[in-house]
Amino acid sequence: MQSTLLPPGPRGRFLWGNLKDFQRGRLDFLTSCARDYGDVVGLRFGRHRVFALFHPDGIEETLVPHYQQFIKHYALRLNPLIFGKGLITSEGEFWLRQRRLIQPAFSRRQIASYAPVMVEATAAMLGRWQAGETRDIFPEMMQVTLAIAAKTLFDAEVETDAPEVGQALHLLQQNFQNRLNRLLPLPLWLPTFENLRLRRIIRGLDAIIYRFIAQRRKDGQDRGDLLSLLLRARDEDDGQGMTDQQVRDEAMTLFLAGHETTALVLAWTWWLLSQNPRVEEALAAEVKEALDGRLPTVDDLPRLSYTEKVVTESMRLYPPVWTIGRETTVDCTIGGFQVPRGTTLLMPQWVVHRDERFFSQPEAFLPERWTEEFTRRLPKFAYFPFGGGPRLCIGNNFALMELVLVLACITQRFRFTLQPGFDVKPWATFTLRPEKGVATLLTKRG
Ligand code: HEM
Image 1 (spheres, rainbow, N blue to C red):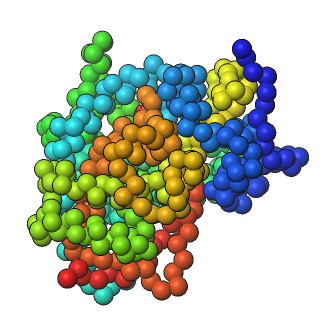
Image 2 (cartoon, rainbow, N blue to C red):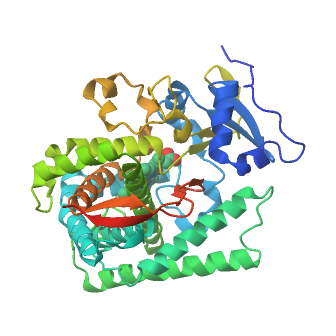
Image 3 (tube, rainbow, N blue to C red):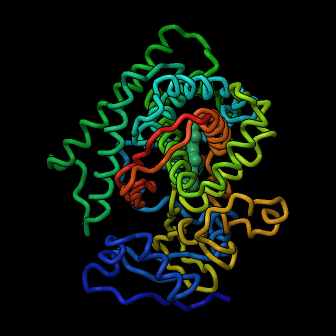
C-alpha cells in the first residue's frame, strides 16, 4: 500500500526553508532534527525538498535494493568540472560499465602490492620530523596520503606538487561551500571572480593529471599502477577502452577521493588519541609487540587488530564523508513515508554513528567495542563510513590497509600532544575537516 504521509520536520522560513539553520551548523542541525522529529525528517533547502533519513533500515532500503531509483544529489552535481563523468558522479549503465572496468584495480592482490609504497612514504615523512616540534598534523597527513595516491595511481612522486594540490583542494571545498550556500547557485559559465578562480584551480590539477597520462602513453609501459590499469582496461562485451577524457575523469576522481578522506581519518585519529591516553597506550603496546621496531608489511596486518579497531572507531565518531546524498528519480516510499520524485535524501553518518540505540556511550572513543559479536549484531547501516550497496566506496580496502599501516608506522616512533589552548572543531563541508587543523607537539616514543 502506497503511503501518503509526509514526514514531520522543523518549520522553515519563507524563501530559504531550513537552509539558513542548516548552514549555521550542519552537524548540530541534523542531530537536533533526529532528536526532535524521529527517523525520517522533512526539510526544505530553498527550492529543494530534502528528507533526512536517520534509521539504518531506511538507509539500507535506499542504498541497496532500490538503488537504481536514485541518482547522486544536486550538491555533487555542482562539481561537473572537477569529477567530470568519473565513478563518483556517473550514473546508470555508464557508471556500471566503468565500475566493472576499474574494479580489478582494487582486487585484494593488487591492493596488497601497494603496501610497501604506503610504508615507504610514511617512513620518508618520519625522517623529516623532529621530536619537540609543533606541527599541524592535518597537512602532514594530507602530504603523506597524497604521496601514496600519486605513487600507487600514477607511479609518480609529487613532493613538489603537494602544496599546490593541498591549496587547490582547500579552495575547491570553499567554492563548493559557497555554491551550496546560495539559494540559486550561479551558473558555472558566468565569468565571476569565483568561477574564474575555480577554472584556474581545475586547470592546475588537470595539468598535473595530464602530465602523468602523457608520460605513461609515451613510455607505454605497464608499471603495475592504477593508471596502467585504466589505460589497459577493456570492456568485456565490446572490447572498448577509455577515451583520454574518461581516463582523466576517473584518474582525477580516484586521486581526489583517494587521499583527502584517508588523511582526514588519520588527522582525527591523532586528535582522538591525544585526548585518550589509555587507548593510545594500548595501541602502542600492540604495535610494539607485533613489529618490535621494524616497519610493517602486509603480513603483519592480522597482528594489528587493535590498530584496525582504533581506525574503525575513529571513523564512527569522525566519518570523513559525514553524509551521503541521493535524489529520487521516481515517486517512492521510504520508512513508510511518501517520497516525491526529485526529493533530495540525506543519510548522515555523523548522526547515525552517534545514535545510542546502536552505540552505548556514543560520544566516547572506545575501540574495544568492536568485538566480533558486536559487529555481527549491529544493523548493517548503523555504521557505514564507506557507504554501501552497489555504490560502496571502491577504495575501502585500499583505505583500511593504508590507515592501519600508516598509523602503525607513526605510532612506533612518535606521540602527539595537542598544543595547549588549541580548539579542534569539525567543519562539515564536502568532507568533515578539522576547522583550523590539529596543531600538535611531537614527542619521540621511548
Ligand atoms: C577512509 C577513506 C575513505 C572514505 C571514508 C570513503 C568514503 C566513501 C563513501 C561514503 C563513498 C560512497 C558515496 C556515495 O554513495 O554517495 C565513496 C565512494 C567512492 N570512493 Fe571512497 N572513501 C575513502 C577512500 C577512498 C579511496 C582510497 C579511494 C580510491 C583510491 C576512493 C574512491 C572512491 C570512489 C571512486 C567512489 C565512488 C564509487 C562508485 O560510486 O562506484 N575512496 N567513498
